[in-house]
Every structure is written in C-alpha cells, then in structure tokens.
Image 1 (cartoon, rainbow, N blue to C red):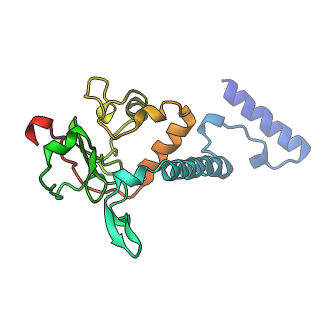
Image 2 (cartoon, rainbow, N blue to C red; image 1 turned 45 degrees about the vertical axis):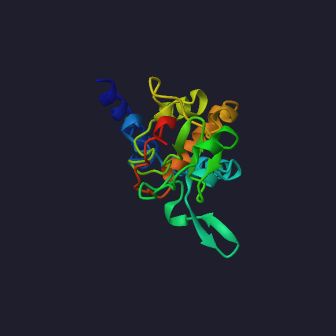
Length: 202
C-alpha cells in the first residue's frame, strides 16, 4: 500500500513540475544491482590485496622451498611452470647417510626436501590447485601459519622443519589475508606431495 501511494505521489509531482517520470519513480533500492563504480572498487581492492600478497610471498622467500628448481644460466632457479607446487611427487631421493644427521641438516638439490633428526620433510604444494590449497578456507590458512598445523587442521600433526611458521605469527591479519588471496590466484600445479618419512624408515 505504501509503495503504491509513493508511486502515485511521484507521478503527481512529475506531472505538476514537468519532470520525466523515469527520474522520479521510486523503486526498491535492494533490487538495484551494484553500480559499475562499486563493482570496480571491489575489483580494485581485490587486485590490490593480491598484489600485496605477491610482494609478501616474494620477500619471505616462499618459493625458495615450495618451488622445485631448474638449471639456469647462473645456477638453479625456481621453475616457473611449477611455481609453489611443492616437492614433485615423481622426484626420488638418494639414499641418506644417517650417520651425518647427528651433525647436519641436509637439503636435496631442488631445496624441496630436507632431512634431519625428524626424518625427511617435503615442501608443501601451496598453489591454487586442489592438491595444493585450492580447497582451503582462510581459517585453515591462519591456523597453519599461526599454530603450525598441517593443512590448517586443528587436530593435524605439527608442520615439520624447516617450515619457519613461528616467524609468521607476528604477521597481521591483513598480511595473511593478502598472502592467502595471492596463493589462491596462482596458476594451479597438480602435485600430491609425498608424506614425510620418519627417522626409522630412512
């Protein structure tokens, strides 16, 4: 009833003051789609967040461990086709001399696998693929980075060395959101990273 009255008043005012009806007829504002300006602002904010995340991932050196290497002109460099894809499932490790582990922590040639007193750990796939973090929620990412939990699950095992998650506890919520947004925007790399190897199985 109120809508009908509002419409009638609008039509009367338009007629009385010679104003085009299309400029005065009232509609439900909730039915209007977002303006192009609002949509552009949202897009700009998302792109800005992703750009910040890319910057943080770069200066934090995430690709140093989470990306396998190829030989470049100046030595090993990150493989752009497997960016943040973690330790390749098809890459076999050489036999480990367990006698050295009392004094050394060792890395493989691509820097995606490390061996120490904890056994062998493999860098995770943090690309946007489902075998990476494609299905993760933001809450899972926060749990992984602040509590050191595998796949960001509260009941999961701890993240193993050399993942320096304690260093990231001081990151702000905005920093972590930016990193997560960037990781979700990366090229998906399908790669199921091997499970860790316990010391008794070396």
